[in-house]
Amino acid sequence: MNFSELPSTLQSALTERGYSEPTDVQAAVLEPEAHGRDLVVSAQTGSGKTVAFGLAFARQLLDDSGKVPFPAAPLALVITPTRELALQVSRELSWLYAKAGGRVATCVGGMNPSQERKALRSGATIVVGTPGRLRDHLERGALDLSALKAATLDEADEMLDMGFREELETILDATPEGRRTLLFSATMPKPIEALARRYQSNALRISTVSAD
Ligand code: ADP
Ligand code: MG
Image (cartoon, rainbow, N blue to C red; front, side, top):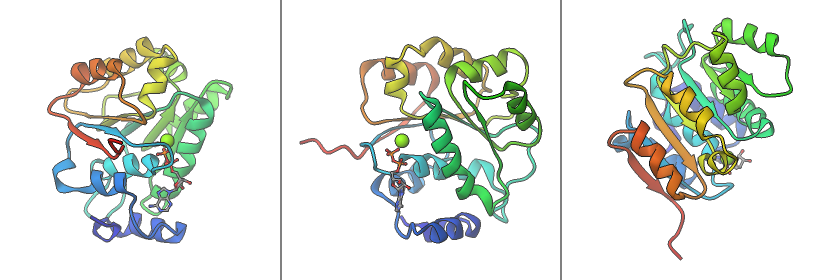
């Protein structure tokens, strides 16, 4: 599977960035058997998981012309363990979706919450944030998850290690039935299995971590 099967809006963003070939994990999530499925993905650090989940939910965001329709509410959510990682993921998804007209809102501790609320109200396609801040916005009614198509946990292992289970459950419990749940991690410890059982159905497991 390569990038040439993607909508031209994404393909040209990747080409301009100098990404000519998908990494293993990116190729795996683009396989037809992964389309529309819940995913549990383990792949080592540096393997390109950010673009992998960015591409994994592309079909839920883009119309037939490869554009993101102006959404009534966010369509994709990415939860990350730290502020730094959220900012990094936001930057990566911003260039990936720029030509498609996708907008990314970032919700992290230490930023001005009223600015974040404004960004959430003004047509964000993708929301990226840390568990505590996302839950705050949710509980104050600033984050509308009613139209969500894909909930992504990045570094799910880290988030559980850091004690974010409750926040994650509150957020996931507020997402609609029928949304995809995408769990990405470098390792797959037991607690992730519990999340997978509760929030996924018939998930496809992808592991590019070698057995040796
Ligand atoms: P992970 O989350 O698995 O640790 P990242 O998503 O942070 O990995 O990506 C690691 C590095 O690889 C980043 O610098 C990213 O820009 C780069 N990268 C990702 N995909 C590709 C690709 N297809 N071609 C070239 N570089 C890539
Ligand atoms: Mg990563």
